[in-house]
Image 1 (tube, rainbow, N blue to C red):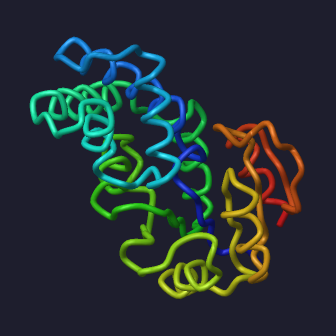
Image 2 (image 1 turned 180 degrees about the vertical axis):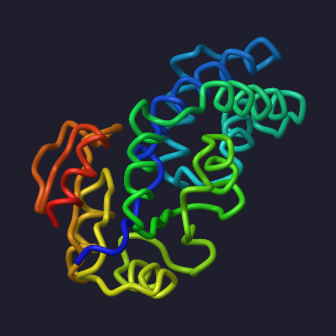
Length: 224
């Protein structure tokens, strides 16, 4: 019997990739207006390389970008980038259209709901609060809190422990095959792959179920 649902956050409950892309683009334009003498294409190429090397949760992307392009840290340009990025991203931040109604549906069934996400704890909580969906969740578990993140099965087991649930009692929902579906399935959870975000083009999956919209999830849970 299913007693709980664990969700990934980014690109599962909201369009993280698209919001971040648009925010970075506007931040680069503002930095160039503030004195970063380069082309938009070159700035984007260098920034993408830094993100690939340091990861999306690294906090000094714009610092490294300015250092790479100017040879030194220019605080005015760095601050312009940071402020513009956050202003644009948070002005756009909203759940997928069917996220809230699906969470209401699942919660009405008496299920425990949790978030299992890589990232800095305060930043992930900020997203949930800005998305206006944090009241739905009984637990929010982050990689920073645990010390390990995805795809380590220990992280997923930690999430189960915090929710006081067994693997066979939980449905796990995520957008990535390697970091979500494979480790969750290895522990015995029922898995649902949602085709959203930048990894959605790869349709190959070992998930028990695949969906294009969160509105499909309550039907699956009801069957289980």
